[in-house]
Length: 320
Length: 281
Image (cartoon, rainbow over all chains, first blue to last red; front, side):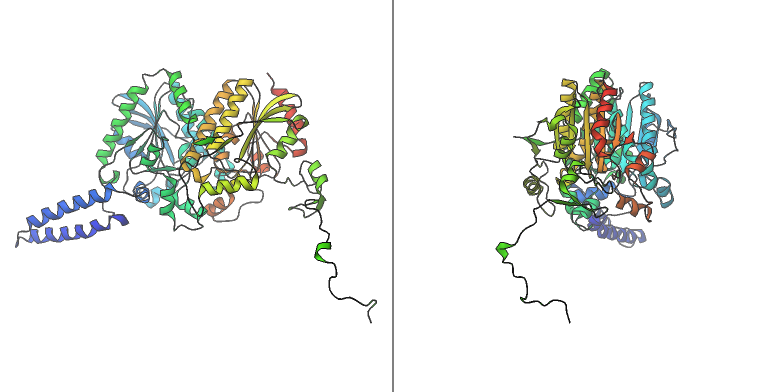
């Protein structure tokens, strides 16, 4: 059970308080409130199911940013059972702490992991630059992709970023070029590539490691050209329309799947990924294994061809 | 005592007798404020004869500059946006499109054409900033993709003239995926060993910079253009202080190693012809 409740989870807060009180009374042992406790517990479960069965786009955005949500390294450590070797540096400027990567083992098979990394306390968040990579992050990613290609190892990218960092030095070192280069190179990598959005999928910063044979989204994540807040501030000149913007952008996993811009959704536990870490780790691992089994059997040229065709067919237009 | 005396008071010319100055006879440079005869200005490729300021021009003007005898053929002219998300902000996207189409006489923010430059065949995709800020949606992605197919089929070099604020928000994730689509498509052009020249003009930012605009065999730019990934306002907010002078200009981007050279518009055609001759297989 999460200790941090989001605003839309307020109905649960009162029930939790009642449950606490009932348990205290029970402990004192004077009155038997067992039936009350059971009732409350089932009520909490039901309320939670109701809340989570009908999430709005904005609520999913909130869940994607939940502070107790697992981050990239949490997934990697769980999936590889600790058999992971982190590799650093882009060999040009520096090591970007917002982008991590390295070799890891899934059920005895070596894969290359790459992903944006967020921090789970103030200090770590700063250290990780809030998961916003600089150009060297994208170049480090590309270096690791090429390394994986050289040794014929599949690539798994885990995407969780509020965007590529819009800083002064990022511009000096060619943020645009770094992302563009990755889009180009990733579309012709000869090894299988699976991309999974585990949190926020913000624009070019996400896409920069997001060109894969399979692009999957966890249920409560978002992926779009802009965050709902920024969209609201550009189109309505304020942040108050972020909920409307979230709806309009069609940025949830369900929307993205319906629009055929992603290849699948990975279900989260009721209550969101943060409410049950082992369960979501298991689901993600299962999905990776399932897709790798198919992708590794394909002819590499055919795989690249299909990847290219998939991205080249994206877009809706009219021809008069 | 005054020197002369007004006999009649006020303006005496009747409204219908008023002589209008013909529209567009003069160009006023927004940079040095000089007033220049329009003909002289357009003869100088819409570059201010006094200060060298490059006026923002549209696809029609670029085609006139580049192609021999101003002769070219437009391809896939009839692609228009389908509003896949039925996007509504302060206005319906659908209405915004119709308005832009009526105002500009264009179908979308890019046109793709084919012709010859100094006798050498060339396929060009050029943006129009007047059309929703030159923003990239599905139409732009598809037109670029088809122009690349055309280049490969007819073995012509390919050029994109970028002038865009980036991705078109009203097509959300579809716009984002155009970055992937165009970059993926460029791998095919590259495999066919055909030159791709990217000309960055004022402004080139966002998703356009982070995809095809930075992927040229040659990346070239007009002087003084704004070129960047994040917009200057966003960068300023991020760092919390004023930006250094000349930040994100063509000269700045050249200095940091992301451009091959800067070319003034009056020399664009000659330079292009030189490049095409050098890269001819």
